[in-house]
Image: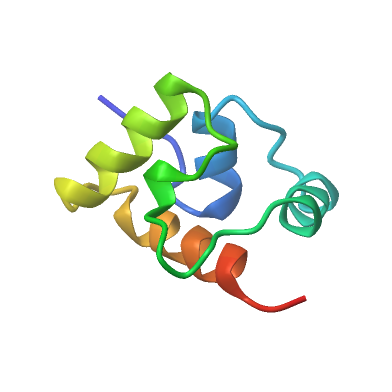
Length: 78
């Protein structure tokens, strides 16, 4: 049973990344999602991360909302 918090910080932890606000901000500052690219297809994910994100969105899992939030943040102009 998955008891983790399904927010942006929790999503980063699920992806094996640091979930602290500073780490998330640094990630967002150094990565960008092109408009025509699906979140799971972004070149900066490893295979496991891409698979997790793809499944989360396709299955509309508990992580889908956080994944959508991440996609929105990565798509915003800087």
